[in-house]
Image (cartoon, rainbow, N blue to C red; front, top):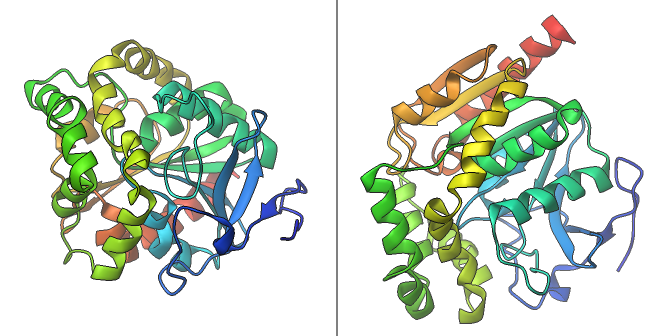
Length: 311
């Protein structure tokens, strides 16, 4: 075990993969050094930190982990610093005792994570629940944020009947039972959410592996539950977007998403004065899996243009 200096100067601990009791990583699919930073409560956050240049903070949602960004990291690390953490209870990040996997807790953890690494000039990539978590980070510490790279996500209470039914089924019944029995939440999300052309057996293994043990599966059905339970948090979050309206935002929107349709993108877009859009016609909910080349090309163009114009 070694402790090399982080790019920010903060000391991060690098653990060999075998130190983690949860699962082994397929290094051909995920060829990155695993880093851990210990937060104030003693629980570590696992993350990837690859490349040099403007910082892209890649925030995953449910039920994924930093593995979701592997294709983007490989494509962008020659020009960008790609930082991709695992939320507590996901991937290789353990949850501290008493953790409830709520969005407020996740925001607090990412705020501390960013502070400990002293990340600045951040381009926040948020997708699924990574969107609200990223917006929460930005509202807490806007001076660290250069702009947003927004995938299929949301930032308000989902009150429509379809979303309410989804929350009830995945969060209360039968979602928890299916999760316990055969990792059913993950199987549903990645069967419906990847379209081009679907996951290989090895990729499936990497998404299922963090939750192979039944006692680790609770985070996968708690997130859907919070769609109904966290209306106050989400209402406040949307109200706070007004303070971020001058931050540039690139929308990268999968058109074949089963969850967030064009109306969600249009509602989010109204909150950002400086914005551009790339509609990904062959991408579903997990656009990072479906069209990474198009996403990375758009990020290069947008960020380079914004930096050239505004510095």
